[in-house]
Length: 488
Image (cartoon, rainbow, N blue to C red; front, top):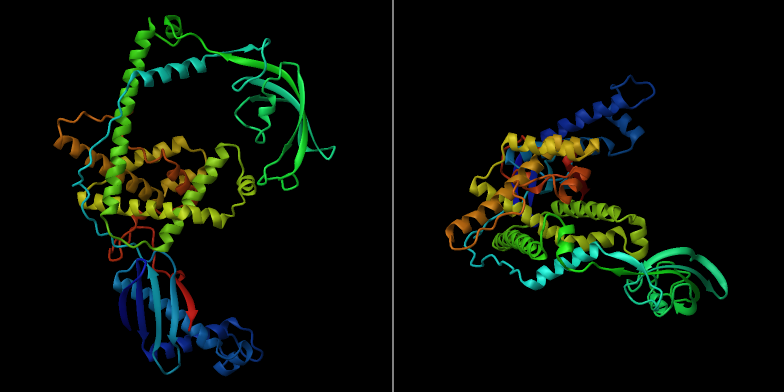
């Protein structure tokens, strides 16, 4: 068997394979026997019907097609092992010539892990940027604490204004007829937050507690309920309750209510110190992100479609989980936005491409730096998965080889970035230290990507062996399910 291997676009390999004629002839004989055994043919015992009888029953060309199918699978498997290729997905196979008495010729296009050529990743000239902490930032936190501890007092001597807490009852009609969803006996709202249709709450301004009003308003053209979109309606509204937020004074008594602070000055100093720690933590994360972008920008690779498509699916699952946490179904979101699944995937794709590049480049640099994750490190993260998740499927993923590879790759990338940050800080002792607010080390479990990867059973791109690696310990095979035929 002759095999020619040629690099192809988008991190793929083109194999051109020629199988000797005698192998095709043998495959035809074997196919005749198999089909004869599987086919009930009157007058013949299983496996004993001659070829022309089998083809009369099953159709002309059936035996040759069966023979080519099996021979292509066997030859493809032999070729990828011989060439040291580990496919990422099914190969696209095109039959070039399949004539009895002649060599079988076909070509297979195989997506493989891209060859990542790393460039400079540590010679950057940018520095961490630490945001300063001033009185205005401290004042903002104090105001937020006062707001959280505010009370609501009844408003009696003035009309409603933005920021007031109200309870309203309303009835909406279209052409004098009440419409579905347009009536409520008691609805709480904060005036000015525009929870209802645009312009509705403006009609409440100046209304006193116990008062009523009526007004006409037009629904937006893009309103999800088509029967109301762009339509004029009339609302009758009763203001049943009106309250205003009363914030406590910023004084020593307030500080004492916030904890073990004798005076407001002590509380302010504690806030200033916390903001300073947060600023250092933020500077470290932002610096890490810039290092990652620098490394990716200086690396060269071509992305195979299959890895990008997997990352799109991971992002979609993250998005679905985010909607669920907000109490929104994916169907409701699609109805409100008019976006189909293919629209979402098109939106996700640019970021998915970038995320895949980041995963591959950082994993390759971690290889170059000799950064590893021990079995004990991985097992510790698996234990965290068992404690964090209740879904047996999710736990099973992280216990599997594929899930453990995900954990190992995630830990290695995190440690790589941390080591590059520390290397820079060591080389610049004059720069302030950049400690984490909570320095417990990287947690491979504590990310939306981890949960999405588990839900999809995804393979971390950084854990895949390269096109010419011969480490078959990973979750790959060269089986016959890696071919997809396209007959010429």
